[in-house]
Image 1 (cartoon, rainbow, N blue to C red):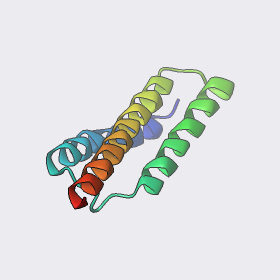
Image 2: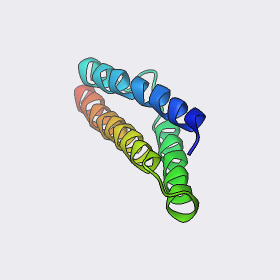
Image 3: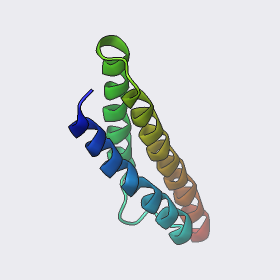
Length: 89
Protein backbone atom coordinates (compact mmCIF):
# COMPACT_ATOMS: atom_id res chain seq x y z
CA UNK A 1 0.00 0.00 0.00
CA UNK A 2 1.28 3.41 -0.93
CA UNK A 3 0.20 6.67 0.62
CA UNK A 4 0.52 8.22 -2.85
CA UNK A 5 -1.88 5.66 -4.30
CA UNK A 6 -4.37 6.51 -1.58
CA UNK A 7 -4.01 10.26 -2.21
CA UNK A 8 -4.50 9.72 -5.96
CA UNK A 9 -7.66 7.69 -5.39
CA UNK A 10 -9.01 10.23 -2.91
CA UNK A 11 -8.40 13.10 -5.32
CA UNK A 12 -9.95 11.32 -8.28
CA UNK A 13 -12.78 10.06 -6.08
CA UNK A 14 -13.57 13.58 -4.87
CA UNK A 15 -14.18 14.74 -8.44
CA UNK A 16 -16.73 12.11 -9.49
CA UNK A 17 -19.63 13.20 -7.24
CA UNK A 18 -19.46 16.69 -8.79
CA UNK A 19 -19.47 15.16 -12.25
CA UNK A 20 -22.47 12.97 -11.37
CA UNK A 21 -24.46 15.90 -9.97
CA UNK A 22 -23.62 18.02 -13.04
CA UNK A 23 -24.80 15.23 -15.33
CA UNK A 24 -28.04 14.83 -13.41
CA UNK A 25 -28.80 18.56 -13.39
CA UNK A 26 -27.82 19.35 -16.96
CA UNK A 27 -29.52 16.35 -18.61
CA UNK A 28 -26.87 16.78 -21.28
CA UNK A 29 -24.00 14.71 -22.67
CA UNK A 30 -22.13 17.87 -23.63
CA UNK A 31 -18.57 17.99 -22.40
CA UNK A 32 -18.47 14.28 -21.61
CA UNK A 33 -17.37 11.28 -23.57
CA UNK A 34 -18.69 7.78 -22.99
CA UNK A 35 -15.44 6.40 -24.40
CA UNK A 36 -13.46 8.39 -21.82
CA UNK A 37 -15.66 7.11 -18.99
CA UNK A 38 -15.23 3.51 -20.19
CA UNK A 39 -11.46 3.95 -20.35
CA UNK A 40 -11.45 5.23 -16.76
CA UNK A 41 -13.58 2.24 -15.71
CA UNK A 42 -11.06 -0.08 -17.40
CA UNK A 43 -8.25 1.63 -15.50
CA UNK A 44 -9.98 1.15 -12.17
CA UNK A 45 -10.72 -2.48 -13.10
CA UNK A 46 -7.00 -3.00 -13.77
CA UNK A 47 -6.22 -1.51 -10.36
CA UNK A 48 -8.71 -3.90 -8.75
CA UNK A 49 -7.21 -6.91 -10.53
CA UNK A 50 -3.72 -5.85 -9.43
CA UNK A 51 -4.89 -5.53 -5.83
CA UNK A 52 -6.58 -8.93 -5.92
CA UNK A 53 -3.55 -10.69 -7.42
CA UNK A 54 -0.59 -8.92 -5.84
CA UNK A 55 -1.38 -6.53 -3.03
CA UNK A 56 -4.66 -7.21 -1.30
CA UNK A 57 -5.37 -4.32 1.07
CA UNK A 58 -8.14 -1.86 1.89
CA UNK A 59 -7.21 0.33 -1.10
CA UNK A 60 -9.07 -2.25 -3.21
CA UNK A 61 -12.32 -0.80 -1.84
CA UNK A 62 -11.27 2.69 -2.90
CA UNK A 63 -10.76 1.45 -6.47
CA UNK A 64 -14.13 -0.30 -6.37
CA UNK A 65 -15.94 2.76 -5.01
CA UNK A 66 -14.37 5.06 -7.61
CA UNK A 67 -15.24 2.60 -10.36
CA UNK A 68 -18.84 2.51 -9.12
CA UNK A 69 -19.03 6.31 -9.28
CA UNK A 70 -17.67 6.37 -12.84
CA UNK A 71 -20.10 3.61 -13.84
CA UNK A 72 -22.91 5.71 -12.35
CA UNK A 73 -21.76 8.70 -14.40
CA UNK A 74 -21.66 6.50 -17.53
CA UNK A 75 -25.20 5.26 -16.84
CA UNK A 76 -26.39 8.85 -16.45
CA UNK A 77 -24.61 9.71 -19.73
CA UNK A 78 -26.60 6.95 -21.45
CA UNK A 79 -29.84 8.23 -19.89
CA UNK A 80 -29.05 11.76 -21.00
CA UNK A 81 -28.25 10.58 -24.52
CA UNK A 82 -31.65 8.85 -24.77
CA UNK A 83 -33.33 11.99 -23.43
CA UNK A 84 -31.51 14.21 -25.95
CA UNK A 85 -32.51 11.93 -28.82
CA UNK A 86 -36.16 11.80 -27.72
CA UNK A 87 -36.20 15.61 -27.58
CA UNK A 88 -35.21 15.80 -31.26
CA UNK A 89 -38.14 13.63 -32.38
